[in-house]
Length: 528
Image 1 (cartoon, helix red, strand yellow):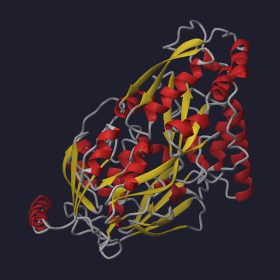
Image 2 (tube, one colour):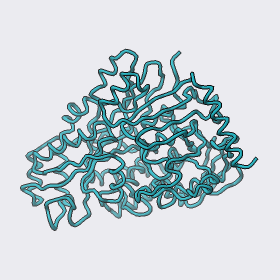
Image 3 (cartoon, one colour):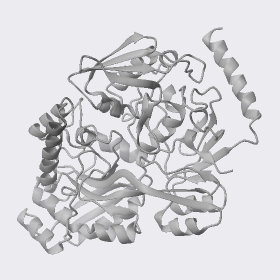
Image 4 (cartoon, rainbow, N blue to C red):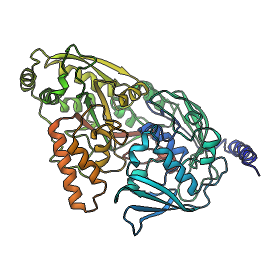
């Protein structure tokens, strides 16, 4: 049977199977925002990965307990050559159109994810070669020993090479340029759910993949998924209370008690692998949105120190977050290797000292600047920015708040177009190098893709690069701590808090919180 005839037959079979599941478990869920794109390599961003994980598979993934477990790779090992990782692939896996999954697709997907358009390329900078050994064995060669390579593959999704070629999407979408390709609204994965329809920011419908390789390994009790993003916090909570939806990924903190006390609804909580912070453009000779001409206030460390001690994190914790946060002094969650309480020191607010630092830096009357902030991405993101705007105003920094959609924010931020901005960061690899590589490394084709501060330190870059190849755990740990100490002293970012995670759902749903905030719906179960 030709591939097109096979795809048609499978589509018909899927339609008939879906009709027979009219009485089955449909999950209606909501969140504040939608996936930015269906192209699985275009954006390295949480809500985008949430949708991709339903439709596509990775070689490995982190389960509900954050353990690294097999997915499309059944086993992996370092070969006799310490620069070569070997992955054994799961056999008998089919893409949604019926095409077989094999080593050719893995080689293609890794090479595609390394393309300059791909935001996922930062996870693969050490990979210099990916090759097929046989149909179900792949080897990846790195530019030196990289003992953490499998950790980098938890959000690296596998695509069908033939499907990509047929639909002219062998190159990832150029998201920054606003490019539209077939892969942006269409998908052909091996994952537990098939894409039925996609209307970005309005409605996405998925149906269970009845031919999924994971049958018997995962519950797969959900037969149909309907995702409706709802930007308004109050409307999201009301949708769950009224029964319009069954599961809410990001319930508003101000409604947690009401939701938890409502009949038929439960709220489940856990610390999230995510830290919220502010970034400042420090390398430009003059800020674009400031009233200061000929100088950049953020280039002076004393200004950054002043802003750091002007932020009252405890007040944000109590008033804005209603206790659903942990004040932070570092842009890395406590889950991550390299974290220590010694470096996660929360600055004590000191308005008088902050004013003095501004005066020492030559800004006794402060200055004006625009703060760019999402209003549909993180828990109470706009409210956090409003609070910090007032706190900075107390020391003379006059902040104009520009609150906008994450789709706009995350298009402009990597291009370096923002002077002062809000960002949140999770660490799927559970290792400090991921934070260094994306947020602190000098921005180039090889790294620093989310470093919109302009920060650049050649010695820090050297150590970031070297730690990917250091196999001595003690030496590597010392390098990590040295880099953190340098970065903390430089005050590159202004940490606010480690985010707490809450999922709200109907009480017939058994679904523990996953600390990356990735609901793998194949793992959801219903209470009998």
